[in-house]
Each structure stands twice: as C-alpha cells, then as structure tokens.
Amino acid sequence: MEKCSRRSVLLHMVIAAVLFSFVPVSTSIPFILFHGIGDKCSGGVSNFTQLLSNLSGSPGSCLEIGNGENDSWFMPLTKQTSLACEKVKQMKELSQGYNIVAESQGNLVARGLIEFCDNAPPVINYVSLGGPHAGIAAIPKCTSGPLCAIAEALLKSAIYNDFIQDHLAPSGFVKIPSQISKYLAHSKYLPKLNNERPDEKNSTFNDRFASLHNLVLVMFQNDTTLIPKETAWFGYYQDGGFDTLLSPQQTKLYKEDWIGLKALDVAGKVKFESVLGDHLVISDEEVEEYVVPYLMQNEDFEFLSHNLTCDYCDSN
Ligand SMILES: *[C@@H]1O[C@H](CO)[C@@H](O)[C@H](O)[C@H]1NC(C)=O
Ligand SMILES: *[C@@H]1O[C@H](CO)[C@@H](O)[C@H](O)[C@H]1NC(C)=O
Ligand SMILES: *[C@@H]1O[C@H](CO)[C@@H](O)[C@H](O)[C@H]1NC(C)=O
Ligand SMILES: *[C@@H]1O[C@H](CO)[C@@H](O)[C@H](O)[C@H]1NC(C)=O
Ligand SMILES: *[C@@H]1O[C@H](CO)[C@@H](O)[C@H](O)[C@H]1NC(C)=O
Ligand SMILES: CC(=O)N[C@H]1CO[C@H](CO)[C@@H](O)[C@@H]1O
Image (cartoon, rainbow, N blue to C red; front, side, top):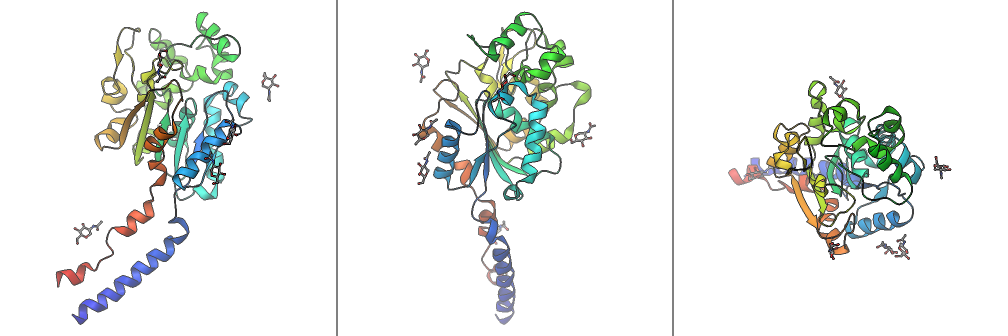
C-alpha cells in the first residue's frame, strides 16, 4: 500500500508536469483557410473564416497568397504552393500543428503544402470543399475573363504549352482524358502532386499525406464548375475518354496508393461526404456537420485523458 502511494505521488508529479507543459497549447488547434480562384481573403471569405472560428471556438485565419484575386488566376500553382509553405513556417501559432480548410482550387495549394513543404509543422485534419483533386477535364461555359482564355487554350490544344502552364494557374490541373501522355509530359503541377509519373514517384509525398489524422472530402452534387464533380473525391474518367467515370477506389492513384489515399481510407481516416448544392454552396448546418467537428478536436486533451488513473495501484 505504501509502495503504491509513493508511486502514485510520483505519477501525479509526472502528470502535473505534463499538464503544466501543455497548458499553452492545450486549448485548441488553429486552422488556416485557402480560398478558391478569383477570390480573396477579405470579403465573403473573411466571413466564412470567422464563422468557422465562431462555431469551432478555434482560432483561424485565411492565408492569402500574393495579391489574392489576380494571383489566384495567374500565378502558377507551384509558386503559390511555395509561397504558402514559407508563410506557414513563419506563423509561430501553427508550429505545434494545425488544421486546413480549403475551397476549390485552394485545395491544390493545400495539398501541395502538405506534400511538398519541407520542415513544416504537421497538418492534423484537412477538410476539402469541392477540390479538383484528380483534375478537371473541361472548362464550364464562360462569358468573359480568364476562364475564357483557358477555354480558348483548350480549343486550340494549347493547354499544355509552357507559356499557358506558366501563366494560368488552372492549367496546372487540366487533365484531358484523351491526352494523358501530353498531360504527363507537360503539365507542371498535378502529375507531380498526384505522384502520377511512373519514373518520378516520391514516397515522401505519400508519407506526408498519409500522416493526416482526418481527411474530409466534400463533393457538391450539383457542381457545375468541376468537370467531373467526382474529382472532389478523387474520382475521375478512365484514361482515354469521357466514357467511363471511375470511383475513387477504382482509380490507379488509389489502387496503387500513389499518395497515401488508400492507406488513409483503410485506416478509416477518409470521410467521403456530399452535399446537395452547386460548387461551394454549403449551408450553415452542413458546415456544422462536415467541417466544424474537425476543427474542434484537441490532440493534447486526448493525450492527457488517456490514463490519469494509477495503474500500479490497481494491479496491487
Ligand atoms: C459578411 O457578414 C456581414 C455580417 O454578417 C454581412 O453584412 C456582409 O454582407 C457579409 N459579407 C459578404 C461579402 O458576404
Ligand atoms: C462571429 O462572432 C462575433 C462575436 O460574437 C460576431 O460579431 C460575428 O458576427 C460572428 N461572425 C460570424 C460570421 O458568425
Ligand atoms: C490583375 O492583372 C491584370 C492583368 O495582368 C492587371 O491589368 C491588373 O492591374 C491586376 N490587378 C491587380 C489588382 O493587381
Ligand atoms: C522527394 O521529396 C523530398 C521532399 O521534397 C525531397 O527532399 C527528395 O529529394 C525527393 N526525392 C526525390 C528522389 O526526388
Ligand atoms: C440541382 O440542380 C437542379 C438542376 O439545375 C435544380 O433543379 C435543383 O434545384 C438543384 N438542387 C440544389 C439543391 O441546388
Ligand atoms: C493509452 C493507454 O495507455 N491506455 C491504457 C490505459 O489504461 C488501461 C487500463 O490499465 C489500459 O488498458 C490502456 O491500454
């Protein structure tokens, strides 16, 4: 009995030390948000960031890349990703780990950050809203603006030209199912992000992505911007044409586990969710169901809550 209580005191001292050392970071994990194309952190997105913060009780901010709206169109995604990487490393509040919420094209920046950024703090949960993860096969109807430039490049079969690749961000994830060899040879972003090139697979990208605790992939059932909408779940057309749409689990990316998606899924860490609206149209209720819970978890609390009882005493 005496032996037990001495151990117990020691144990409590250890627990006290652990508690004490975790106090500054044990409140909540911060999140960052990446907006989509033609958007910026101010305006509507700042309301959304604030809403997520209000509902989750976690601090969060929208991470801007360059000048926002313009650069989201014209800065190649490789550059956008490396800017995001540098910014994140400078944000002290993220140094213990953080969560990500991303919208549309912002998901490719987010995933680039997770996979490519060396010596960066860990990403814990990642919630993707309408991300073109497996590419887009066509451009929706356009009336004016940069979207039409992309549509025109597509018409002229110029989407994989160096100039377009270097000056129109979305060209980095256009994947025309009938031009896969051109895509693999000349696209400057998505083939690397998805570890698609047979000779250039990098297991580090896979390891980093597979280390997420939760991956939430939200697809918009009425999405008219992403073609196909299933790209939000990593589903895509079979190489060759538009005839066959593969589910995420039927793709080679999944089956051969190029980036760790399968490993995450098998471990029960991927949530394939869908909502009814058009691209990025999500209700507050859906936000509360699919986004907020992943911003509320607290790793340190989980750690501390494991075993605060005296195991030694029990066994005596
Ligand atoms: C942001 O929210 C405020 C108050 O809730 C509202 O007045 C404003 O119109 C919103 N802004 C945008 C761009 O949605
Ligand atoms: C967030 O909470 C603050 C403080 O309660 C409030 O002023 C603001 O309108 C809320 N914003 C949103 C978008 O919910
Ligand atoms: C956005 O880009 C266009 C075309 O390059 C340029 O004319 C315009 O000044 C830019 N706007 C901003 C705010 O940088
Ligand atoms: C794989 O990526 C990591 C991280 O960016 C890099 O350090 C390493 O050199 C890459 N390996 C190869 C074979 O390219
Ligand atoms: C989905 O799109 C169809 C066809 O445009 C429309 O009738 C329907 O109301 C939309 N549903 C939602 C939830 O947006
Ligand atoms: C995480 C951990 O250490 N859990 C342990 C807590 O104590 C119970 C009972 O002694 C163990 O069964 C758990 O493995």
